Every structure is written in structure tokens, then in C-alpha cells.
Length: 142
Image (cartoon, rainbow, N blue to C red; front, side):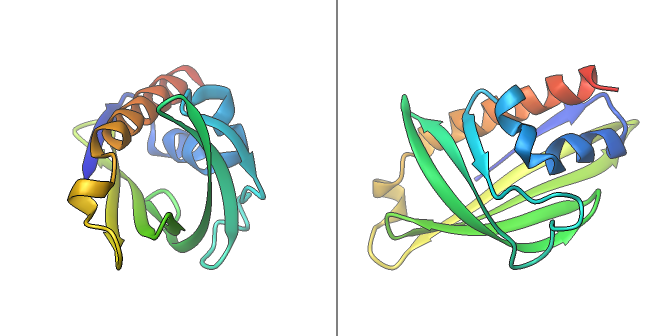
């Protein structure tokens, strides 16, 4: 599952908004809290942090472990919730004078059939909301 948005802002600014996880609840409607957030030095593999997401009207906590980071290019992290393992990649690329931000998720489970058990429509709406809020924050911030 993957969604993208084009942002009218420099790559550095877009990356700064993405990588300042402590501020996500200030601009992302779906994120209500972040803890143990990485700073510039701790966006590194094996750093663990968490966030609370509003899913279908309920706050749901997620704990994630960063897998890979290439500053101003991408962040990968992994989490497991209700036997579902998610690998999320947020990537930034400069394209035709704008930044293209892509949020991709790969879901798997040893127990549940993902197509039947996971709320794909809810996740898609949340992703679209996060990307829209990111676009607005990056385009407004200096």
C-alpha cells in the first residue's frame, strides 16, 4: 500500500518536518502523541520510539524500530501490532522542481489473512491525511 504527495518546498525543509517526530502531533491530525522521538542524531537503525495514532476514532499506540535511514531520502521502520508486522517507508525525492513524498506500507502476518483482517481503507485514509498535513506544514514553514 503506497500513497504520494507533491510538496512545493525544498527537500531540506520537507525532511526537517518529517524528521522532527516530536512535533508530529502539532501538525498531523492522525498523530496524537509521540514518545522517545528521535532527534537528528538518533534517526539511526535500532532506535525505538512510539506514537499514538487516531484509528477509527480510537487512540492506538504503536512502537516502532528504525531499520534504515538515509537523510533527506528515506526512513524505514518496523512494528508489530495484533500479530501484524508493518514495514513503513517514507521517502523524499526531488521531482520537476517539487518534492515527492511517498509513504509505503508492507503488511504481513503469520496468523491473520491481511486482505481480510486489516482495515486497509482506514489505513489508506490515515496515510492520505498524514501526507496532506505534511504538505501543508512543509509549505507553510520556513
